[in-house]
Image: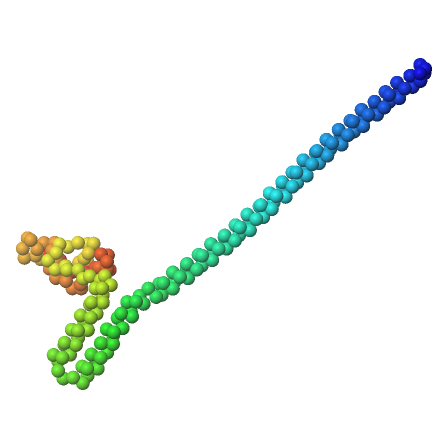
Length: 193
């Protein structure tokens, strides 16, 4: 090969090497762009996943919120129904007493025997008292006890004849009652001073 040919060959080799280097640089640049677009694509995919999760969480939140509102509405309705029918079982148990009173009133109209009427009234009273006792109602015994503002209501005071009767209940005007150890009616009493 001649020098001229070698020079052309070298020049062609240099040009080819330059072109290869340029192509390599372009390929690297294209790869970098592809990677950047790939990362951008990954970020877009990740954002889409997060948005989908957010939408799903919002749907769950709205579902739970509506369930809770329904629960509150249902329990409020049940509570109102309970208040309306809370004394139903007691009233059902008292109906026979009412029936007995009606029979007693009819018997008093035609009967001249006072002892029989008194016996009938006693039976009805005992039946009524038994039902109330079974439900937890207890009368309070106040006469002779110390006056206690947690249990008694003083409506009057009388002078005590003895020192021991001071601050003691002398008489009971209206009986007090407890329902399962809770005072439901204070006893109205007269206290010695």
